[in-house]
Image (cartoon, rainbow, N blue to C red; front, side, top):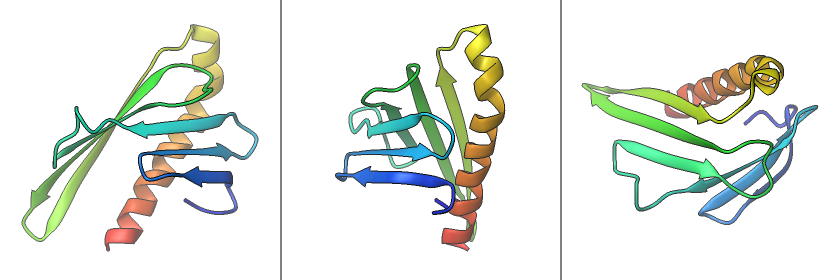
Length: 103
């Protein structure tokens, strides 16, 4: 995660939380029971603005790995309008970080 966009990073191995500058604090908890080697499940954790689940799918493809993220959040229409662009930017930032890390 780019340090210029993230504040207050905390992690204990199974959970993490951080604040995206100018947005709410986000907490994630790894769901060990629902995750597999190709499907990681992260649930909302702690005091978050709305419940959500983040699914990260990965599949080996020759010398590379294909990765897909799915976000399932429960938001009303007003919150969705406010959160759509920041969430899209956040997921793009995650994808870019994964690509740089594994390149």
